[in-house]
Image (cartoon, rainbow, N blue to C red; front, side):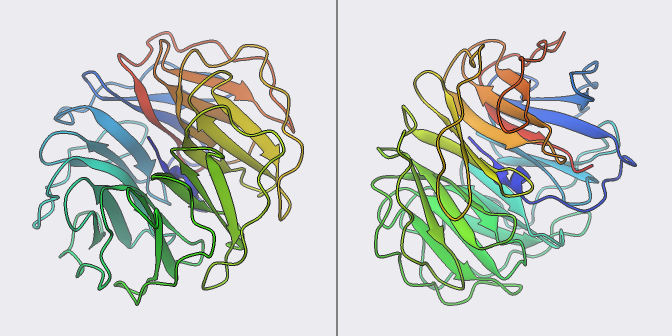
Length: 340
């Protein structure tokens, strides 16, 4: 499930000197698969010497591309590796352990903080990050009410959003090396459990994918929620598991249950007419979606083999790229491109 975002906050220059990689978190060992990406899959990188310990949920790269995070279902619930066209030695686990299965994760735009959402109270944990975990920040004063599914920092790093189970389904706090006082809830809430939250690249909008129709909701954002935008005229056909803005903010993608499993809309302070579905759709429920750093490609992780599907993107889907020669070994839950 996603990611996000994260994978949704892109750094300016990656450690790979312009090269791009594509990572998939999945349900079966080795739980993470990473490929070179150049308008198609390269040969899968070797697995890390220390694997994640269970079902991989979300994968994100740090904004500079130097680190790779996988959240997973078994203690220590998170694994972080140095990344340089391959896995380095896993970093030590955080001193204050994540208490249960972790779902989403996100780096702050400057890479100085790492947020992790999880099943047990306090449902979100944030740590300073500098090639390793620092001492966990204090929990928010107004707690998340139930399972945290995803976190996202605003592009300026001044706010942090958490999509979660139970009303209000989305909670946002000011962020400055710690949680500020929670912002007021939006006047129109999502209609069910929040799965993923993402800010637009300019920080002017906040999108949330969730568990019931209309499956996607978007608000203007300016240190607080504005009035909800009108729903798209053609709704996603199932639960909105993943959401992603294109890097230029001109398009908004939703990965969802039920064919075609992904829906993409033009975005300009509101939904445009849904783009045509890809001629070859993902083979199962879309768990996560992301655009490449240059916006030229789109990837969807899903729950039926080959577990990841990619397309060229140019105001519409191109012809599906060939599947990787070594596909992920189980349900694709999270997908992320490294920064360029």
